[in-house]
Image (cartoon, rainbow, N blue to C red; front, side):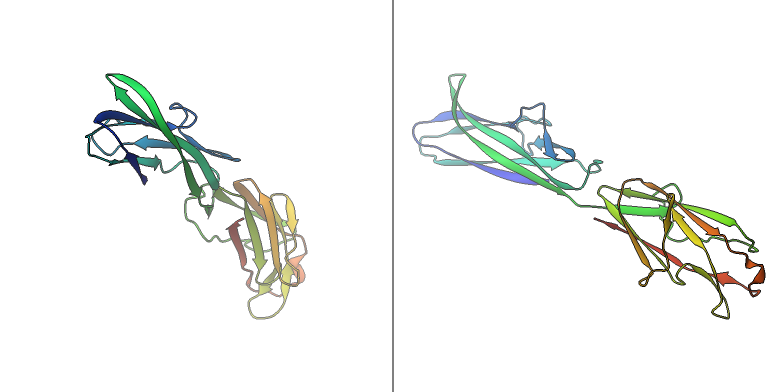
Length: 242
């Protein structure tokens, strides 16, 4: 909520006046806009005068000696709107009328620019609900055999573009618990094979639009000749707003 203070100047004899406050596009269009969408807002009066979601009217009277009067109104943007991140802008028209024996006479007007910034947000979780808060998951191959696959799904809720960064502690291998021996595996994200053997063992993907992602882990080599024991790797996924 933002509170706006108006000041009305007066010279001359006693008079009554009315201030009309509404969106520049008309009372039926209380929207802030950006290239990616629109954000609803309302104009409200915190005082005893006429109040509406998109128009406020203020009434007053000047005495002969009074030179100035102040009025306030509120601009409220409802929380929880599902809009893209970015800057949203609009304009409010403030019109001043003099009351001449019940007949309004236009005197002056001002245009007020309204700006609201929606910050980028990203939430992610393993499973189908991006707000579930599941930050870790285990993939268990059991007793390894050739051509095994396991899948894992994670979800992202974002109001902006986001990037995924994936890194493997063992650079795409399941490492033996006591030795440096490893069994390679393939990682496939949304149908795209990810290289986990790069020098920085880090793979960045950008411009992703889907909120549901699938990870598939494939062991294609024959583990029958491998050392007996427990094998593991740790995959880290970092999701960041762009």
